[in-house]
Image 1 (tube, rainbow, N blue to C red):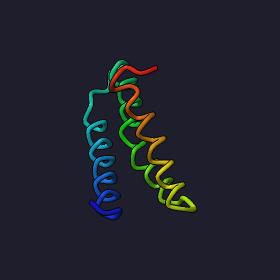
Image 2 (image 1 turned 45 degrees about the vertical axis):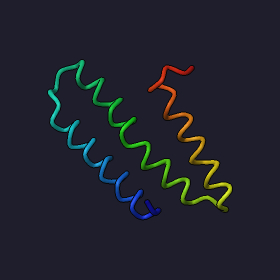
Image 3 (image 1 turned 180 degrees about the horizontal axis):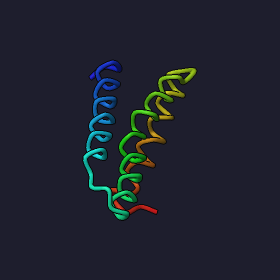
Image 4 (image 1 turned 30 degrees about the horizontal axis):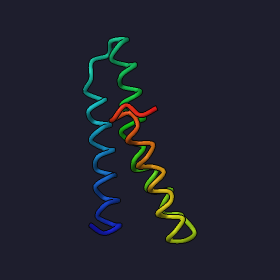
Length: 79
């Protein structure tokens, strides 16, 4: 997968998250979940965009490693 394909997939994922949240019920509890889903679901695209602005290939890889490490924490229960 090249950079443009990854960017496209991440953007598409973020847009699907927005559509998902827009279709959630408007109860108080679902609004709380919706805010967290928006933050979590759109951050990969934002972090990838930030990595693409890196000044070097080494900086780019470092930013992606940081993103992966921090994104995986909630999935596997790391603290």
